[in-house]
Amino acid sequence: MKKKIQMIQGNAITYGDHIDTDVIIAASYLIHGSDIDYLKQYAMERVDPNFHEKISEGSSIIVSGSNFGCGSSRQQAPEVLKAAGIEAVVAESFARIFFRNAINIGLPVFIAPGISAITQEGDRISIDTVAGVVFNQSKSEKIQTTTIPAFMREILENGGLIPHLKKSLLTCKEEMTR
Image 1 (cartoon, rainbow, N blue to C red):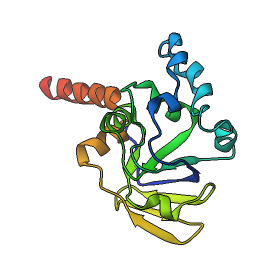
Image 2 (cartoon, helix red, strand yellow; image 1 turned 60 degrees about the horizontal axis):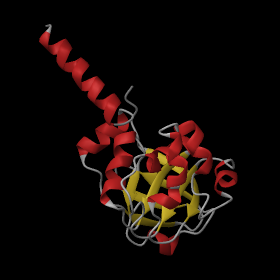
Image 3 (cartoon, rainbow, N blue to C red; image 1 turned 90 degrees about the horizontal axis):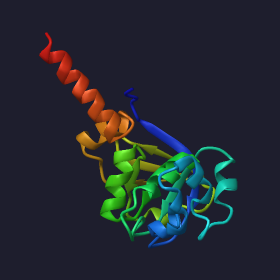
Image 4 (spheres, rainbow, N blue to C red; image 1 turned 120 degrees about the vertical axis):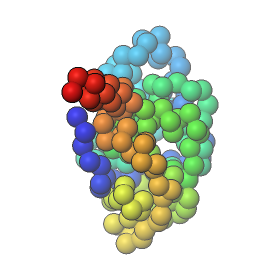
């Protein structure tokens, strides 16, 4: 199910630098395995006890400083954010494994150096995913993001790596039977 991702909008939930995966979802909860519907209730609880209240106010985008998603390579970290209702994450920089895990599960992530300086908690922001621009509507300021390569955009538009591979295999199978 491919959906074109052109514009993402939401209210900013802001964090500082070095938000690690153990803060996003504590390892102590991983005894429940990969039950994301269960785990999502504990997302960000160590750094933001009001995280779920902020999301309940409408579409939400995490805006963070540098090195977002550092620490262990647990795939549950981006999964719980997406399951909790986060539309996208914009950060000064990401830990590489978190960035790729987010793309693989279909959570849009954008690197935007300087984003922390122009965004405060609750600001309304929009992300033009094609032009690579984050616009802070609350302050009428914009900042450029690094562009997502075409193959990663396609993975996001297909809903993540597994749906993308399924679609690719079906397409290949259809072409072989012609």
